[in-house]
Amino acid sequence: MDAPKWTPDLIPLAKSGQIKTIGVSNHNLAEIKRANEILAAEGLKVSAVQNHYSLLHRSSERAGILDYCKENGITFYSYMVLEQGALTGRYSEENPFPEGTGRGEAYNPYLKELTALIDELKIIGTHFDASPAQVATAWAIAKGTLPIIGVTKVRQVEEAAKAAQIELTADEINRLERLGDETGVHTLREWEKEM
Image (cartoon, one colour):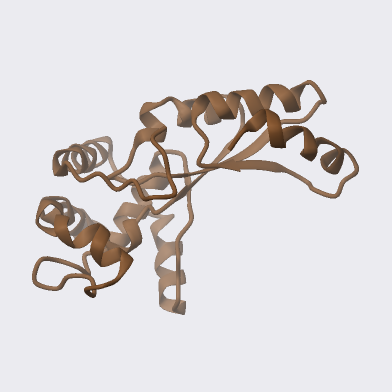
């Protein structure tokens, strides 16, 4: 996305009240800063960033985007926190995603590599009476992001709400991140780019 190209078009809409806030998605730090510079000249700002962020994909953190958002009062919405179900504990080598699906193609080849991380999510979950999905969501919250969780059942909404009450220790966060890194699994999807 070309920030100088689209950002000016939003300024009159924001000034007239037709839009309340301005956000960007799948932008790297330079693009976010450039959009913010263009908006700041008109007394406006980027209010939200929505990027892929999970225990398997922390490029927004490593690129300094999370810090920039925190320093500038920008809400960071993390999507794919559960990696389309791969971090829920529901799928494994013995119970893979359905063959012939996008999720199956993306994650089935790596289910073995995810085992140690999933096991740790389960272990931590026992301390909170929580599922691996809730722990992975709690991790994203602990990192200062607002996770976007896809739900299809009322139970999933209730579980996501409970995840917001889980307070992970620094040690638990570090263990999860280390195991996430050690998987070596690269989950960048075809519509995304490295941050």
